Image (cartoon, rainbow, N blue to C red):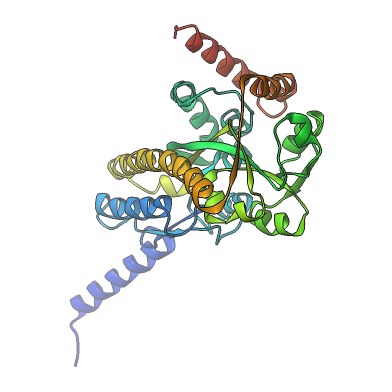
Length: 339
């Protein structure tokens, strides 16, 4: 069989376009990673978002989701995005603060927020500021989420800050400022990778860990750390981010479609995350003998006092001073009933 010259030229042109598309990354799937366990509501929502991306960009933005920490810790996810091995990630506030330390205001400050109303108000006011800072580091924030509160799980009963000062407290590896803060507060932090929490509890390297309840249930942390302090230590926050280099490959119309799908996914994850957090505590207490340590006003006051003492060090160390001042003023105004 022979082909005409025009056909050969057309075939060659199509082939060259296909090669160019592949090399430029426009035809290849986007790779998104998260620590959220596989088949959880978060994982399913991200996959649904991927379908919406594909539909909203006429197939240009297909998505592969790597869940359950299969691509490593959040520090590793960020490194992989910077060298284009990953393109996007669902990161917690801890991971986001590695991109820009301003995000530490959401998840690294104990007892700063009293309830979801305060957190939502601050996030709404501060999102544009933080997104601009993160953009300057090469990442685009597509949506913000929260999913309940971090609680303190331990091998032995803990009620007071003094009790926790006697424990071996988990803290995130690669975050020397947080480790230093905990030491200044009188605690004994042990810096390890988040993927090693369960094994470290089993071996006794650590015996106390601040953790989201749904992760404590999924990882069966309750079996080695069967005590939980029942108060809101810090909110669990996060965001879906994509590298600026990849984001800029899409047209404004495609970006709008992808952003809308991500915002919707963020709303779904926030709603399901809050619900699952409460449900996880109930299941661990009712079915797995988790001992929930209830707090009275006197105990909460002791924890608040220790946290407030640390705020002077957190400002300009864990959190940039200008961000700290903005947020504390926003909270003061909100609590006074003014904006």
